[in-house]
Amino acid sequence: MKLTPKQIEVVNCVRNDDPKILLLSGAKRAGKTHVAILLFLSHIAQYYGEGLSFIIGGATHASIRRNILNDTETIIGKELKLDKTNAVEIFGNKVYVFDGANADSWKKVRGFTAAGAFLNEGTALHDSFVKEVISRCSYKGARIIIDTNPENPAHTVKKDYIDKDGQRLSNGRLNIKAFHFTLYDNVFLDPEYVESIIASTPSGMFTDRDINGLWVAPEGVIYKDFNRNKHFISKGQIPTSRIEKYFCGVDWGYDHPGAIVVVGMDDEGRLYLVEEHAERHQEIDYWVDVAKGIKARYGNINFYCDSARPEHVIRFRREGLRAINADKAVISGIEEIGRLFKRDSLFVVDEAKRFEEEIYLYVWNEKTGEPIKLWDDVLDALRYAIYTHLKPKARRTG
Ligand SMILES: Nc1ncnc2c1ncn2[C@@H]1O[C@H](COP(=O)(O)OP(=O)(O)OP(=O)(O)O)[C@@H](O)[C@H]1O
Ligand SMILES: [Mg+2]
Image (cartoon, rainbow, N blue to C red):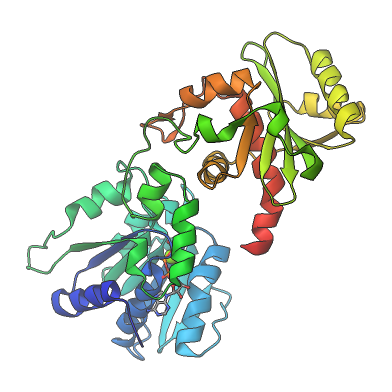
């Protein structure tokens, strides 16, 4: 079986230094899970036929199936069907599968004695689950393998394990060994694919984490790839005749401005914010009028709405407007908008004054890893519109 140089480095370390806890953190698609599965299988094989217990932990049963069991089946050439106890037999041992994302997940592994564990996507697991699994691996020679993408440097996976890289037990055994992966470490990826990923990953935090595999806090302006010289266009520059589809995003507000934006998509998938409506201290009747005006100009198009005010969404529907609850996943939505600016595929009409104010004031809160909610009204409306509209397509291709 061929391995990348980085994976060989990890395998050699396991062979020579025998770490109890092995952490593989870094970029997406870097080859972490692949080598983690191989090492976990070879660890189980060392106890061939002994009927011991092992643990696989992941965020959900679906993610464990997708990320681990499917590839494991290919490697060992055997179908892995979970039995009633959520276990599979591998090399004459029992491997128990647990979902570990919730605060009470740890209770499921109470009382266990395991000879090893593989925890996939460590930062998606609850800290108490990670710690319980590690304490359950009490059998002699047990090994815990954790793979993960990086997150905030304050995350417990980073603070409690990665930062203790090199720690030894009193008997001299290496307790913790951490490896850092970048996208470039996976030499088996098609160079064209790597290039396209780099070209479409937003600058700043997303590039630092997803490409370079670094544990960085987000900082500064959120949409770092917005460039007013390229992305602001005059009304006359909008290629109206090529626009095939219009849709809207709606962010309700009263003390903060409420906002409706109209977005057009052209025949090559480029997007244009063509109309911005942002007003403070307006009641729902006002917004119904604005939306009806949009419907009169563009037809019966979708309004992707902030679901925080269901009574407003219902009112829109009663008025004959196609109001749909938006997908409000913050980080994924920001990543999508950031990707569009990076690829020069999103343009904004220069009449959008509130957008112009917000775009440079929309900044990360370094502590929470979320945006500071002060200057986000038009930007939220834009995110709801585009992320919700593009998502079904992303699902089909991804
Ligand atoms: N040694 C290898 N030989 C062949 N294919 C490999 C090898 N290592 C990794 N791959 C393939 O590269 C892709 C990415 O690898 P993998 O899933 O291990 O990355 P990852 O670091 O876990 O990524 P993510 O953070 O997105 O989960 C997968 O399709 C995997 O099968
Ligand atoms: Mg993985």
